[in-house]
Length: 304
Length: 306
Image (cartoon, rainbow over the protein chains, first blue to last red):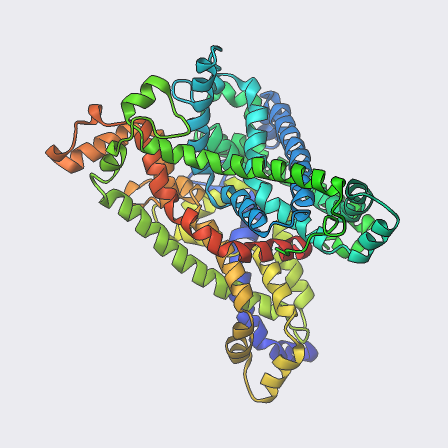
């Protein structure tokens, strides 16, 4: 005990400096974690989180019986898979090709322009989407009409949205994401290229035999890390581009938008807490699995 | 970015020329695709409502007109107020968050702090598991009573483990000997943090500070959850709200501006949305090329350590 007190005294100033962040994490992260008991309760305003009555697994039953559980989980995973694959391909291609150019200005300007979408909010992206896709005024539809085709009602037809959302996702993250691949290419030892040149490899062979294999570790790590988040939908994007447009929901509803509507629109605290817990557990498990895989691949990059 | 090329620098044969051509076309196309939507929004904002309702949005302004902007600025105070909320929130939030995160990262990077692994895990665990939206929402609204309180906009973004890790890896790069030298000279921990660590962290403070500032600037989510008083809306939520209730916005403009402006029914609608978006986006487009290099740095470090 005395030893502990001495240690405490020695680290006193560190603990004081750490205190604000610790209080913050306890209040805004750990206390809400305790609040997941709400998933097993029937929430009443009077009772609050801890005083409301238990109702067993009713909230979960309601979620799984509604038929939405499978739909929103499936949407979340499939959208994320599409985003991961498309983002990786686009970002790697941009990086590989950009690095080959000698023109300093082109490279700088191209990279800056690709970064532009990263800096704006999804609210602004939703206005851009409206500008492009609106039925009456959208650029795509006025173009189709001027070419003698029929208009397409994007906002009334779910089947277009996997493509639309994927394009906007790639568009917003291409500048940000390619930075990592550029850094990976810059880290490749130039001697490998010199050796390849002496062996008579042309530039394409060097890209496929040197650049891509050397980038593979970065790619694998980033892929695994994004797989860790595969049950987490990008609420910002889905909510701004789709919003409360119910016609599109079967094709676009993800766990996060579903939880949000259950909470804010329907005030169904119990069920949305249950969905939240369901998602948190899935996320936790996938992160652990992904981290295990990273650890097997290269322990230096594992998260913990 | 490094200006040196990798494979292309070695060979100037036909293969390199073909590759360069592919690269110019591909990257040029992507860069244009990133730019053109913004051009279209700006063009639409300078078009007349009449032309847009007849032929839709286009790449260039149709029947050049300033009517959308004169409508937006008929009552500039509505936008100025949203700007003021966002600017103040971004400034306060960034300063407080930067101080909090740097101080925390400093302690967690000190090898002579006995419980640094334990506390690192304590923070890290919050990224692995969370209670979800509902308990957080109830905490903010039912227990802390922060509905329609600016703290509801400030608090959620004050602390991020991702930024903490970036900051920590910058601090770890400062030689220990400098910190011990300061201690031998009689500096306390706070003094060491302020007079030794902070000055050496300028690039890190810029990088992490800009990450935080962008998060505050673009935040609309907290406002949607916790703010219902439209006088308190920050910029992005203001835009969200007005674009989605453009008729209501036109009524407000009409009632404010009195007889000086056309009746709500004669005001532009679609071009008004676009002009509003341009006014809200403005500063970001002008500033981002200047700060982009700090982001590039932060993204690279964050991916390796985060």
